[in-house]
Every structure is written in C-alpha cells, then in structure tokens.
Length: 406
Image 1 (cartoon, helix red, strand yellow):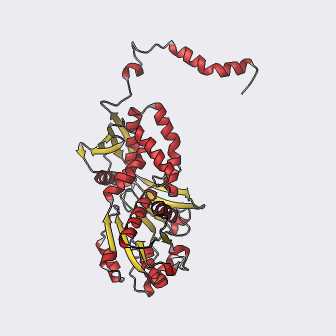
Image 2 (cartoon, rainbow, N blue to C red):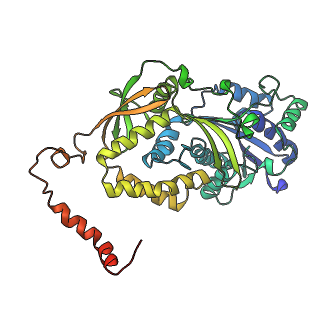
Image 3 (cartoon, rainbow, N blue to C red):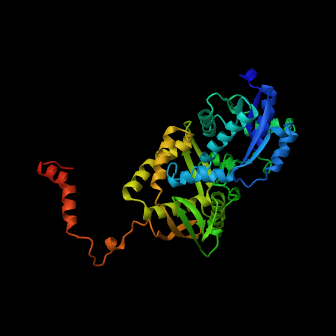
C-alpha cells in the first residue's frame, strides 16, 4: 500500500499525535501530505497550527483550515438534539458527533487535491478510528485510509514525545508530564489518560477548563428563555441567533453556573471500557429545554416512540454510523415529529442545575386545561373511565377466573 499512496490528507490538529504523524507519513510513505484543520469551536487560534505545518515543510497550498462551526451545529448537533440522544444514559456524544463532519471534509479535500488517501490520529484502541473510517468509506468507497497507530511502534505518549523531540517538533507539555488526551469542539471538551485511567481516582480540580466548580458558581441563580422552532433553538432571551452562536451563548451561561460536568465509564465500540470526563454546558441546557418543550407539544405516542428509538440512534452515532441508511431513516422519522415542537422554555440556572420554570406554545401546545383541570368541567365524563379500566383489565379478569395466579 505504501507505494500506492502519492498524496494523503491528514486530519491535523497541531498537537502531539498529528504532528508526529505528519513527519512519520513523509518518512514511511514518501508521500505528499495535505493538512486539514477544522475549526469546530475548540476555542483555539488556528494560525499557529498553520504556521507549525509550514515549519514542518508543508506547502501553503496544501494547508486547509476551515471554519465549520455553523455547519457543525446546524447539520450535526441540532439534528442529534432533536432526538434527545444520550449514550448509556449520560454521555451527550460531544466527540462522536464531530467525527462524521471531519470525515466528510477529509474526503472532499482529498477529491479537491487529487489525494488518494486520508489519515487520522485515532488510536487502534479507540472509537474514533471507526468513526472516521466508516464515514470516509460511506462517502468514498475507494479512498485509502492510513491509521498510523495501527502500524507504528510509537505506542505510548512518552514514545511520541521522544519522537517529537528527536525531530524538532515542539509540543506543549504540562509540568513535565504527558498532557491529558483531550478533544474539544463547540459542544464539549473531553479528558482521558493520566490519573483518569484508574476509575477510582477523582479528577484533579484544575483539570476542568470550561466550567466553574458548582460549589464556586454564583450564589444568585439566572433565568433564561429559549425559543424553539421545529425542534431547534432559534432565539435566546428574545434574541435570534445562528446555530453556532446559540450554542456558544448557552455554553457561556452553563460554564458560569457550573453546568455540564460528567465523569463516566463508558463501553467503547471496540470492546473495552473507558473512563473519561466531559464538560458539555450548553448541550446540558439544550437537552433539558428540548425535552421541556416536547412535553408540551409532542403527542404521547410520538414522544414514547422517540424515547424507545433514542438509545439506538445514540448508539449509531457513538459507533460511527452517522452516514448509514438506518441513521438517515431514523432522522427522517424524528424530523417529522418536530414539526409542531415550537414554543418557549424558561429555565433557571443554579450551581450545576438546570431547572425548568415554565414552557409555552401559542399554537402547538397539546395541554388543554379544560380536560386537565381538577375543578369542575364540561368536557370530560369521569364515568367513562370505568369502562376504560374494565376493558384494560379484561385479560386479567379472564385469567383470574381461570385460576391463574401471578
């Protein structure tokens, strides 16, 4: 395969792994390298990354840095949140949902530059290798994939640092130790490695980069209002916002009030358990708000069906099947359910908590006080409940008369 690769597009972050990979690809494959860096809201200046690629010998015309924040939130994050997708009951899929977007642009840049392969820095133990490659093959079945972690002998952070030092690649380090393995985008930031490899070790307090410690969050709560249209948040406190700006503003509110921290042991798709810590401030607020507006506007049958298929949808994203026919099919079903998910949700933010204070929808609310009231009404005949109960109990009654016991 090495002789067949003439040009490769590398998903390049400028960090330890991909900086080493860039040099390794040139040495091992003797090929031309194209770098692709995506701005998906990781709050990082991309200019130094480009400069670093230039210093490593990459031609300027082979360096791609793209601002994908709006596409990321509009086309990937929002569709996922319409489903209320949560993996294994807790994880809001912040890393998982970014990978198909990166795979999409890797393939597009490969086509644009005439590259015959793509490369990534995902390890052979992780989920990201699956996500990148399933996405790439779904979009271009003829693309070649180079996964250095499955080929080289640089199988530890210390070996990577040693390789970088020997080849003059500058790497930011924390107090002489290998840095946490981190991933950040507009939806979340994650942490793995170091003391987190023991699930019984508590995270270091200074590890968290985005959110205020809930104990140190403001003593005064803050109230916000989110307006929804067709299941997507479109305005915050009366101000219309683009998808990326909406998530960015919610991140600020959530971070301020210590919202969205998670310490999780999850089941990786490749088979082992993994411990990671996450900060998802804006996403945590969105999940609470979306479920609140759905509770008012979504039919019971539709709501319950959504809850039944949600774990499957979340698993598809986690496992890398964003571009699969089944995910697309489920998305069509979900999006149909969101036609009437319109209205406003009022939330109180306080020391790590998101509290629903109210929800309203002028046209699409299915809450009818005439039917729901505990006072006298003229629309509901309470005697009807007797037949309803008897019919539902009929199979129990028949079985009981037949001598069956539970």
